[in-house]
Length: 322
Image (cartoon, rainbow, N blue to C red; front, side):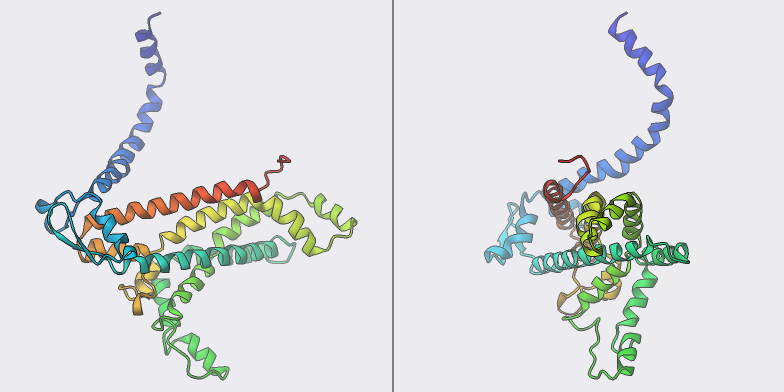
């Protein structure tokens, strides 16, 4: 049998599968793969949304615009001869975003694990409380919740009214104060702990109770059991939650846009990376620069994810004895 006839028979046997996969492949290449390649190309141009015909190739100009302030550069001349001013707010957006990610993610995971351990106990009404605690995750990313959060933490909001009733005075406007604005968003992120809690709860259910019984017989108290049994056996789940929550935190936009007033807040205290990218692309119409920013964000997330997986060999246990 020739190779050609064999290929024909293979295609005939699998024709139905390829037909069913065709819509997915079409959607992937049209709506994901091609836009990614196009944005990669735009990142090396000065593409302006309002002047598409004037687009010119500027090489690494957009990336110099991002990081030029690190080297004391205020402006530079592109290969096209155009004078490009360095983005003075780019490093601030990076600083705000990294602060948010490195504080909100650990706090959310710690709180989610604590609640999951409580929900894993044989208590009355636990199924009801599991559902209630998951609701913030369903609602937390909505515009309505962001508006509500902004109202809660305003100068005359409910939070200050409650603190004032307890005797506190000279309370700040938490949203409008650059020292506290970011932390209200961190608190909002921690409040949305439901998805991590459910995953932790599933992981806790997989830990054999015999381990805890044997540890109790040997005289280990609850803290020792948590440190030497729960955490090691739950480490793969912690790894999964850590990676997923980190990626999600880097992409936060709605909360920063609504609560920060759409412009990054006072003194750019809530100028998240995605918000800054949005402003560059849809306010100033600099789509070439916004595309370059998007690819840098992808690189940052990819590098941090790789580092987490690289470090996992030191702290993640899969029960294989390695």
